[in-house]
Length: 223
Image (tube, rainbow, N blue to C red; front, side):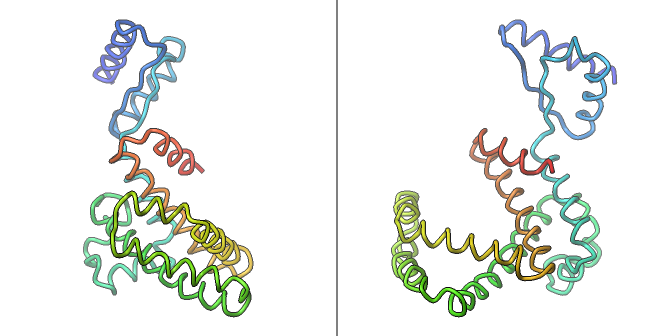
């Protein structure tokens, strides 16, 4: 605790030297907990320090939450039976103690579930929204340009096309159908996709130095 107190005092000195209104202090999980406790005890003196947990530890916390929520719903068995995670390592991965393996697992699971959703989407269009089939066909005929030449310019061009905007709105409508009209099971696993998307947004924000995306991911994570 003494070391943490020194860090907080030093941060205040830096803030005053640079004449800042406040200063952000990023700590690992253990130090963050102690620093938060110290800030509670000296709230008036330390009010200008914004304490933040490092992205790695924040991501590991979210990994443990995802693991806890979906472990007994079949995620644990999927890890082992698919061969993605060895049986002896699965507990550490789902507890958030194996960052690299955890992120890899959830990326693979995310893609697998999204592929199932795509299959259902095509059937949903055929059964309930035949009038929108032209929109889907147009989107897939144009996206071939991005497939042939993947770059940021081509991606932005593709995503700003009217067909792409209409297609994304249509797919969002389909996911809402899965959430609210297709039963509790699809709603449950869509919540998994939502949580993994938050994790991926957090990691992207960190790698790109995108503060707005980082804050957005943290805001979505808190509930």
